[in-house]
Image (cartoon, rainbow, N blue to C red; front, top):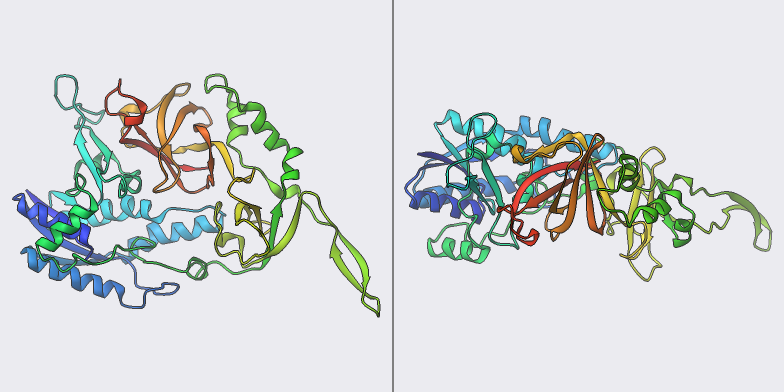
Length: 445
């Protein structure tokens, strides 16, 4: 079988290529360049050239053909432009998830197929296996083709299944993940023993194929910098906020007891727009110069300025430039129309966490379409709202308004635009704690 390995120049894809070659596959390597502009990047102008050089040396060392393809146009159109548009709306997208769905397993796969590939392989830490029935026969989907599972990688510290949460069954069927059963130290060991040029290369960081960036500088290529207020929200605010009080009122209800309206209430973030600041005039100094100041407000205080609310994300604590607090300030909300950022002090701030989120009907994606919930159904799962977050016990609730994830415990920093993903046990009667099959995902509303 002819397999194309996406060779990035990193150790993971290098070892994946080596293992495929050793397994007897007819392997060739394809390196893709997806980005040219260096504005906002932190690692210099020619990082991709170094990656290509290393990738080519790896291919030569293994003894497989090496090809190059420039996918910068589809990458900008499908990933970067979407990212800019989402930030402009005050949402926080995940470009790595989009890159896998739109580029690595779509545009890249098309190029590989033209070169004769029957399968495409990557260095992701995840696993794939066919869905089998009780007799061991493959389960066939509605399209008449075998169904596949997307499983977490064996290395819990490196599991990258989250980034593949938007793959379709068609994409998954043609994918191979050669290092999914391995742990990172073992991958490094294999690379060193094989004397691969990438053996000691550091893992890449930052935005997929763009690299590590100064995000505000990067976004300023299309989004304007406009100064706005940073407002600190005090605890006293929540004692009279109707939305927060509604959270408390509904907290004891089970998923089956919650109405559509109540789920909508639980999943809607607090709007801090009712915190307003009035000014007053006073006289200062020996000359009694007339000045203006804000009146004290029991619910909050303007504590600084920012360069544009669209450059920040919920849960963020770095880059605010506001001092004078015992604990760190965290972003609670961003208001794009008023260009205001709302912050709270400490990880336990009341506005930082909530139990429920919503995924709009057209944003629900089932990696396993045969497991899709119908309206009115619920299912126990383990879920996460960001990469590397430990899995959390939760209930999926399908209603006409979308898919709701109701967590057993409040979750910090639920962020619109990010992907929520859920996992289920492979065996129907297995305990929830064994859930390692990623069955679906969706964009947080």
